[in-house]
Length: 154
Image 1 (spheres, rainbow, N blue to C red):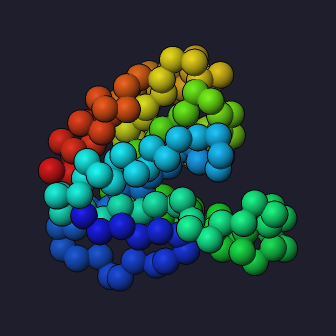
Image 2 (cartoon, rainbow, N blue to C red):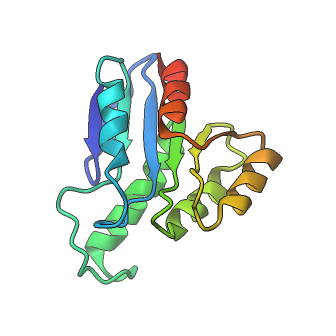
């Protein structure tokens, strides 16, 4: 497993190489670092993990197109979502995750989503309906969702 974190740009994709984008709840200080759990379970698999959880994120950045750091982050995420072969999308029940909901909407028809939405997420019903409508694999357990991801990349 190779991990590429925002804002790093991956090298040219190798033949047969699979990219997995870790979309979902981040909300620093609220969401658990579920990305670390996914990375750990993928560590012995030949896959590239695209992780938007930025080491040098500064919550004081103004969320505006005029802020170069913020714009770089959002553009990196959009570029990597399109580049990914699979998008693993996790909704942490302790968060609102509006950007994750946006990502679900943007990529619902892409045929490359695995979604985990545990009980307690405030918009679980909306997530369930979108996943049902677009025939997206939906899990309530992070472990089960990761197992499905491993089948895809393994």
